Image (cartoon, rainbow, N blue to C red; front, side, top):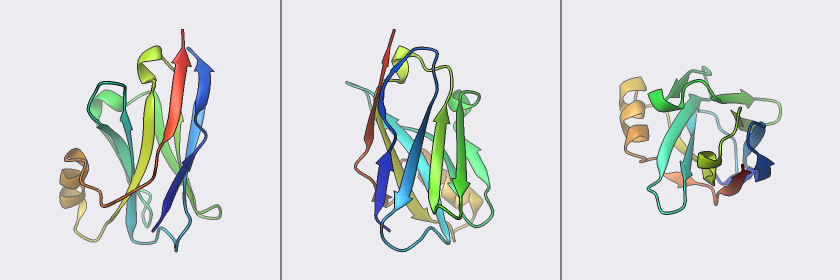
Length: 129
């Protein structure tokens, strides 16, 4: 699995953005794909993830509402939509993949520890006020 993020850029506060995560290697079968971000001067944090096989989604509580993770099997892509963007959403956004064969509790634990094994290079999102 080799991940590539796209869709970042400069946007105005209040707008929306959709980021994409695609796999330039094989495919996402049997993987969970997570979205994370790292703001300037802050630690990386998780947003949520989606399990490719059953489309189960999980979000960190503080990320519920404005962030939506979805997938398109035909495009072999996972998306992160961010609505009502705020300047504090300025960050590098990463997707990462982890085999999902350990069960949902195990996967959530790894996600909360930011312990997904395969990462993309990130895409910059800058929100102007």
